[in-house]
Image (cartoon, rainbow, N blue to C red):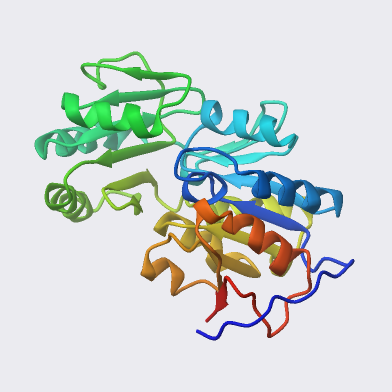
Length: 289
């Protein structure tokens, strides 16, 4: 990768829409918004560029971030299963089909993994105490409840089912689910976790639907992310930027690599790749493949 100085800012942004992942991208490793990231997002919106969040999480986790940033924009949640209008209306919602949930749950239990059902407004966790505690410690948000039997709990259909735990049994569970040939999308979203959505549900598909709704050409969309579940956004956006903390396989698919989330890489990308017209030059702290 060749590293050069970043191009100067240009008053005519090349992009109309920025879509960013939440954990590991917009947020640092402590779950906070750094000041450079907050400032860069405000600079983008002041330049007339819309900023939206696309997360594997749900409304209780996403909306506080939008409020802190002063963003009155839609968001994509539960891995692309829903698109929420700022007034709370769902522009679409495609949960995991009820028919397949019992077999999914039994498979996850068989391998001793933790499991989370992510509805739009609430998250339900089940699993061994150490697995549940890990989730509560790292990714808890308002509206998170622990249940003893997720199949008996009076809940709706989840937009996403998340499974996590030790990597060997996790990979075996994923292989088992794939062999069952159910119409599902399984994608890695953490080193020790996978997401399950309905077939075809991805962040990229939701992003494409929103861009079409707004009349924004996809080549004027800039996507930022750090995990495999962001690759579908990279595939449809005109500009894809992987964070420096992303796995190598994710970085390899991106147009540019930003500094890490703890180094405010999103701010670097917004200022040097979005608020400037992209050229063959790249920034000191980031690279283009």
